[in-house]
Length: 416
Image (cartoon, rainbow, N blue to C red; front, side, top):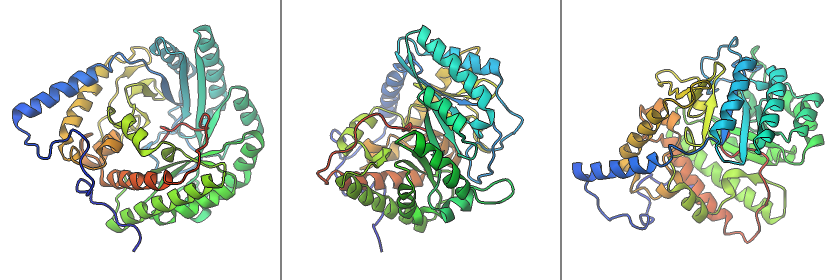
């Protein structure tokens, strides 16, 4: 039977402290809530931008069927002038911050390695002149990694995040070449040995699909045995999840948590980003947030120089509005429109207010909510189940009296 999936919003756990036992949402009460949320969000409008996701190209060496960069146009490639202005935007928009981050994305960003290298060098020089430290990251499918690219990355402290979805059978179901061949062997035989020679921590982004959820723990164990030791695990919230598949997702997250707890108890070098904060710490951190830092401290830059709340909005899904907040030339001229949309969405989340997982969640992914449910304030069910599984997983992990690994993670916890 496996682990039961808690019914979201009706868990037997008591409501968060301060939550009334019964709330009647009258027009006056809703108006008051709206005013408080708007006031809180308005306070973030002056928040500096600390990170940009830079889309160097929409072209790719693979044809993954779930890629969130929908309707890719291979000819859409960023010019040097746009990349330069994006760097200058980040340096200026970061205000008094002493640390900033630049994340190269695509498509496959290594198709534009000369542009990536030139942009990196320029960003490093600009940051140094302004007294800032800059951290670089690349999300890559691994098919183009070479000694030259990795040596360049080491010189600038790059973090490489590989897209690997598990063992060969699981990965190759959805991550294929344009000719229809699987890509797992190409990445595992070439990219992983290169990375192992140059760095101790090797990070991967695992996307969980409805038809691969049942194999999640096996995939983590397989990749760990191959030398991957840091994981970002995220379900595809834009997919159609059947009840049985959601139950498999929940059960497999618990299985991964137990594997992780055993590994850290044995002192193994394993990191799973979502598991690295106790439940209480994570709840305190998430309570004041709207799901993520999209459009607040982080923006994405399209190949044409448009500024979007996050990477998920750069190439919108069918029916999803493109929330362009400005350009690298105009800055965040339309940022207030995003904040208003966020405020309206939080008001719409009435059904979340009494959910036992509310303090751990903060509303899910706005982009997926819009795509699936037509509103940023209506979380998708898969996200609710994942959050419930995470809550159970954290309780399992932190019942083990063993220290977690310390230090700076090799991959970005928000990268998707």
